[in-house]
Length: 291
Image (cartoon, rainbow, N blue to C red; front, side, top):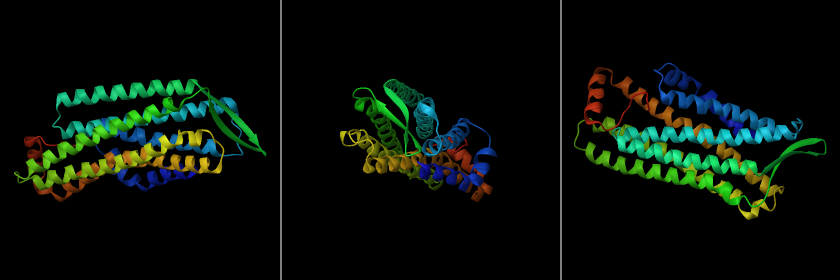
């Protein structure tokens, strides 16, 4: 937990210069708000995780309950925002199609409302308490009844959404590349579509890895042996890749696109107007700060 949280803070410091240049100093948009929300909610998440993992600090049973609930709802909030980022990218790639926008919004609402219901059911069946072992303190969570399906469903639904988003992005990317072969500006727009696909592929890969380990965590092998060394190592690794996927790879969906756009605009100053005109006329993708 501490390693994952430290990685989030390190990445924040590492990319702070790019963040100031590409987010703070640019015209604000929905993507700017989503980026900063995910980025700095990651700091709050990391602090909560660190406090929860310090064995010399007693936070009482009530504190354990608050921290557990906070981590669950922050995870849902971040996944909602990452879903909104993905949907916005797809909306831009599909030439701002109203039908695609409605489809993406309805799908996201169904997935996230269902996830919220399952998470609320899981929290209602959870019992949090602080154990005192050899002068150290540790929060533990136990559940009433069988909650494997309840705990698995949010990740199953989220994985289904990510697979759908990847398929939609891949299909339109192939369509773009075929169409751009007939246009002189294809190199510029094609590079932009390539950046979109590469960053999305990296994000999807990280999500698949997290989903695989998360589903393994709720399997009978681990739920029947909660305090073994093997289970603790497994959960520790899961927490590391989870925070990296949400708070490192996730924000880079926006940062990488804006960095590429800034490089293109900087290297094409004389023809910036023509490039913008070409992008608008052909309606392929939007390279504005709204992405």
